[in-house]
Amino acid sequence: MYDLIGDIHGHADELEALLQQLGYRPQDGVYAHPERRVIFLGDFIDRGPQIARVLELAQAMVAAGTALAVLGNHELNALAFHTANRHEPGACLRPHTEKNIHQHCQTLTQLDHAQRTAALDWFRTLPLWLELDGLRVIHACWDDSAQQQVASALADGPLTDEFLHAACSPLGELYEPVETLLKGRELELPDGLQFLDKDGHPRSSIRARWYLPPVGQTYRSYALQADPVACELPLAVNARQANGYPTDAPPVFFGHYWLSAPRPTVLANNVACIDYSVAKGGLLCAYRWQGEQQLRDEHFVWVPAAT
Figure 1: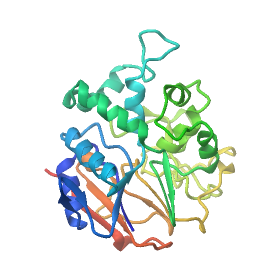
Figure 2 (figure 1 turned 90 degrees about the horizontal axis):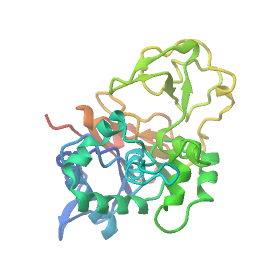
Figure 3 (figure 1 turned 180 degrees about the vertical axis):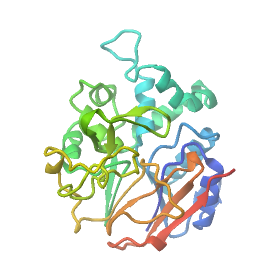
Figure 4 (figure 1 turned 135 degrees about the horizontal axis):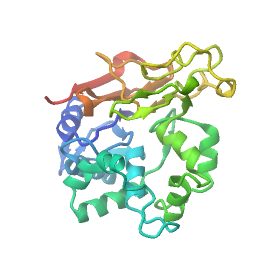
């Protein structure tokens, strides 16, 4: 069975406290459990104060077989930030804008060149999703159509520069499906409405509750987070054409969405987000999966962010 751990963002003390609370103990320097394995949901880096230690812990567990992991959007962003853009000499696939440097600055500051190189090499080996016996894992959004498009371009080995160019350039053929899988579906707000996100950047779109059928929803009810200007107007016709996550599908676990609540809860019988904003003073969260197909609130385990 598996313990699924959400976005860590460089918070190693909280990660070790959570692993210990889950019953994992160091064995030859690697956390292990006699009966269970961890699945990390991505976003190991950026924001937090102990990025090198988080990577050391997670990489050791994956190498030893006591954990699995999927790629997060921050890992993809890092790969793009450090990969030369073959179509723009002197530039990288993720432009070195003030915004992008700020988002990545803790990783740039805390890791030396050798550490960054090793981390990037590891990120290339991570799958974009896992479909195991009885459960599914992805960083942001399970989307069969997007996964079919991406799967045809994935090889068994590490992510290649060719894949990164197709996935990280806005003109690349895999840009939209990879954005969907690792950053989730977003819907443009009507009438030019905007709001400021958690980092103070203006946004004109909402992160959608992609797991729910959109018919009958408004922009406010379909927003996964409580976006302050999401309005009560019905969703646009093209947004209503999507399907929700099937209620009879295997449970799906994801992170990414910076949820906040006094305690974690499932989003639907077979849908759980495990990101509760440890990097914003929230919780580092895990879900202790016992094989159930209907998820249960009491299976969440968490530790608060260190003050």
